[in-house]
Amino acid sequence: MKGSFYKLVMLTLIGLLAFAPALTVSAQDCPPGIGASDCALIAAASGENAAQLTSFEMQFTVGGVIKGVEGGNVTLKVDGSGGIDISKLNPMATDPAEALAGLVFGVIMDAALSGGGESQSGTVEFRIVDGRAFARGLDGTDKWQEVPTEELFAQLSSGDAGDAGDLGGLLGSLNDPSLAGLLGAIQTVYTAVDGPSIDGVSTRAIVATTDLKPLLQALADPNISEALSQVIPQDDPNVALLGSLLPLLGSIFSEAKVINTQYYGTDGTFRGFKLEGSLVVDAMMASMLLNLNNAIELQLSLDVRLSKLGEPYTVEAPIN
Image 1 (cartoon, rainbow, N blue to C red):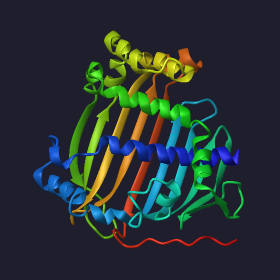
Image 2: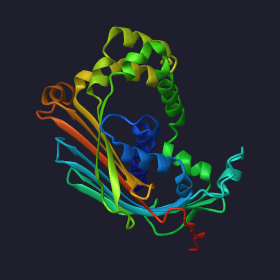
Image 3: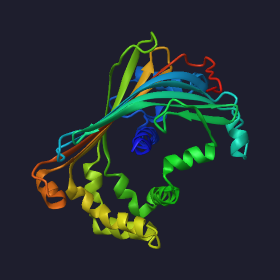
């Protein structure tokens, strides 16, 4: 149970981080709603000041809640801190061990999960230094364990790397011209407001609010369904099942929204982001699919703040 709990925490964090770049604002093509001064901050952060992001410290929170399920709300809360230094990475390395030899990474997380009258909580910590990976808390104890990096990532993927690869291939196929109308259905509105002070620096918050409902509805278009059937691997039953469910998503979810807020310092540096997502299954669909009498709502959020940009970040190999 403990291992599954921490795996859920890490996969939630990794999933949100992986999705964040998809909604990044481009300084080369600032959308309506973003003024010239804010575009200049984005350009500086992604241009002349980008090198500062090779090392930094970070504070982050992860929040999640599922409302409307039997037994009461399910909630996930994570408070974490750490840092990363990639300044010594060898970008030309082809051997993973050689590439990781230049990575310094550390993170510690306090996590709590509750629902259905039960709760779990604990602390987990990871370190990568000198090409070696260490973890503690995964087994419910405070004892450090050295974990081969390939084993660490295999544990996080739960052996589902093949499915993830198939899904990645499917997503990569979305640039097929016959699917142009699918991505064109995504509707995003951009705004800019004053953000919080981070590491003593005032920020501007660039907010991208994306309504995914039109995208989900577009999946039911017969032409798009036919085009998707041509790129979905039919020899994998799991991926094929996913393909058969895609046209139904527009009916299942009454709301699907993502809000991506990026924090840019007034000194022209990138200072973090907040990613929020919500999905709602209305009461009628919840009754049909789950035999429930009320709507189901899923909310997820990840808030990351960066400090000490460009300063060396160090951790030591732990000793029990």
